[in-house]
Length: 309
Image (cartoon, rainbow, N blue to C red; front, side, top):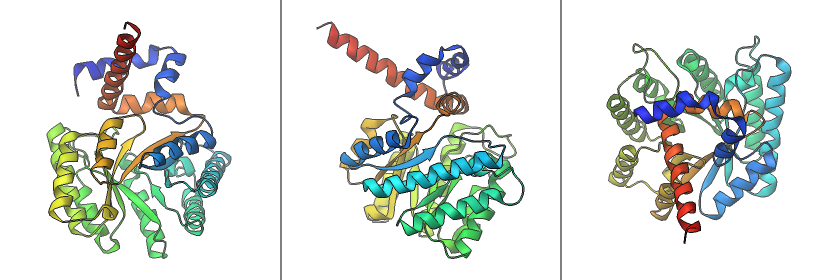
């Protein structure tokens, strides 16, 4: 993380909302499911898959949780109708994890069953470490109940991740492996950049050795290169793993991975909560803010050069 990345993040709250919207429009599909489906269709046309996410977290009421659930049901129906190569990613906090009575678990099961009927898949996103045990417990219950079309996310910056992989081993989970973005104390999470990288590599090796399907979710070239070497050494076919990236980030590199024969899935968020999502995600992950700023500046300079010809 550079001083420039930090400076960009500190400036975000004072940036006019229309400017944030203009910048974030490349990284958020829009406000409606139709927008997300349009972006997913464009990704499919160039050989990329999609995972669609309804923006909204920290739900406080049962009504809000049902609304998010219904938005996801609509997304599954739209994916099916349009014939898209896309699935959905769900945060349990958006389905009412903080409410009493297992609201989130019930809503999640509804989505998993609906997805199964439509031959689709649900990814349970991982949130801050205070929710890790709950999230894994709900995931295990679904798998033990016979639901195969559901996956989980593990974060390499958490010190517990290798133990979690060992504990999930008998399930051979479908895992999205990422670094992690939430601010955590040193006793919970590695703080050093290289430490997080090293644990990512160790976690990926453990998952592949356990026969898991892994979504390698990173924009870090060091980790992309390491993953390519690992899958080549194990002679894995392209149907046995995938790379994952955020919409609008490192698009050229994602296309290069497709050209090299890898499966690539792009995270496609949509919804009315685009502004809070934009600020929160960039504040939680200044490195991504740096990627986006550099990319945006590069596009401006390119357009300026063309107009000066």
